[in-house]
Length: 312
Length: 206
Image 1 (cartoon, chains in turn brown, orange):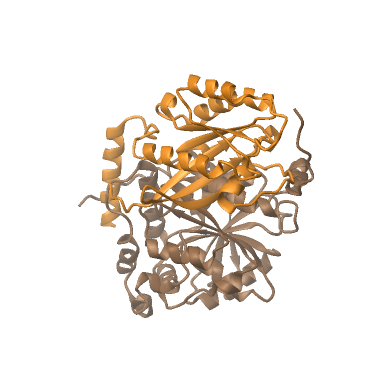
Image 2 (cartoon, chains in turn red, purple):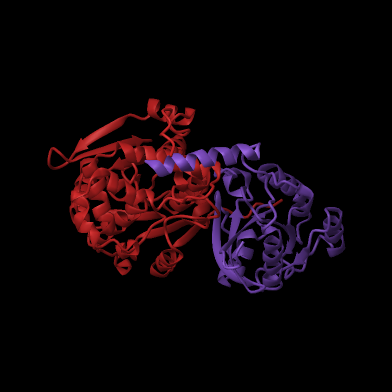
């Protein structure tokens, strides 16, 4: 066994990451009890009230989406990435998240949800079905039923497990064969984030991830959905992915050839392109994510089919 | 490599604005045609599952903006393309003349390892119209001069030859899929191995 290297992982040590930390300030927001602190990064034009909100997987912190924050905000999109406080159930989480959205004075949001983030995003859309707060969801390596992890039984005991056992729950799911460099780097980055999480943070997220629960997709029929997944190795089974496609037959399917568990880190340019395509239909509407000042007016005309075929 | 492995084929459609890139994609995937012209902004894609010689293949077909003004999305989606479809309008000679520059642009941006043998397909669209300007012979000659690119003439409107063209695209792309058509992302291969090995170990022991 080798000792952990003392140097930070290649992504944390990269110039891109340093630039991110030096340009986008970290904010802390308390919306209910004092112990419940949301950590967030808010980038791009503040007058946009329907931003893209990024929700990380179990092991992630808000900075796992730094490549989306940087790239999209530079193009005029408002992007907010959040880190969850300790909520022990999805219901509690949704209540808290709703308070956060109200606190930030957001109307309807677009969510990029990765894994657990995708699950709670769907639950959030389900719970706000009557007065919608979720305009669209970009699901990345998502699932609709927690039984996929076959852990519903042990979920009740996560709160009393020691930290190393909790971490093991996550690490066993990471691939063990040889990997492409970008994918390996993304895993390293996530594993370092895992080390920073407190035992309660980790236990509560695993509980939400694994306690028996499922999404009722018919209640999300007004939500615009893109499903992103990878065709190489990831923690999700093929069955789990197919179930997703079946539940959202009209969703756009943004498959990536490769990218592993964390494509927003390992394939950020492809993911960012897919995100822009996902948000395009909202351009020129009330729930736009990109500053309308920065949108070419011809694009809005073109989207409405008001542009004549150019004659050559 | 197991035969059961799922395959994703990425196909990029390029060509001048108004030649029918979106219509061809829509006709192939959705079996729909509309004569209402709507410029494509940035890029868009559709997926379709097809059987190619007993293999289930997911085709991801990228429709791109022909108008330069709307190409704000960049070209990140060129990466890893398995086939490039060049489309022109048989009733508009200018759209045929620009095929060279579309081909060059693709090869520069996608930078496949062996540009000469990268799978392209050329489609001459709108054969349902009467005022044809580009003779088939001329298009075929161009295709032959570019290392025998397969050539199809289609009508997206009347669904003529569209399925056949895309079947050829899928088959050619699949045939090349197992060759490494792209250079590795990092210059020296042994480096990657070394690196991912140590990565793996550090990952496992925490």
